Image (cartoon, rainbow, N blue to C red; front, side):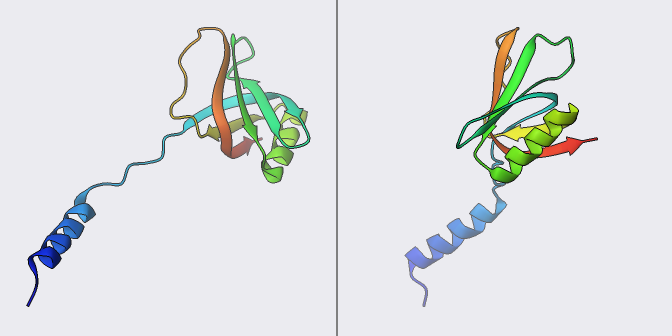
Length: 110
């Protein structure tokens, strides 16, 4: 015999299966890797979407593999797709610096 609590829990679990999971908010930009700034513990990537852009995008990482990829991309000024943990890509200011947050993934394009 099922108790009312068990029936309620089963109904709640079944209903939750129908609710879509929310995706983690991120900010993704495709930029030309212009500059890398490293300290003992982190590396910052700086770049622009176009050579005449007034906006400098930047992101920081503590991951050694991403740091190596950043320096490689900057050496060749390659385009990279950078995804950061910022809740959304900032749209202001019209000129200046905009952050993608902490870099969680990066794809280098030849």
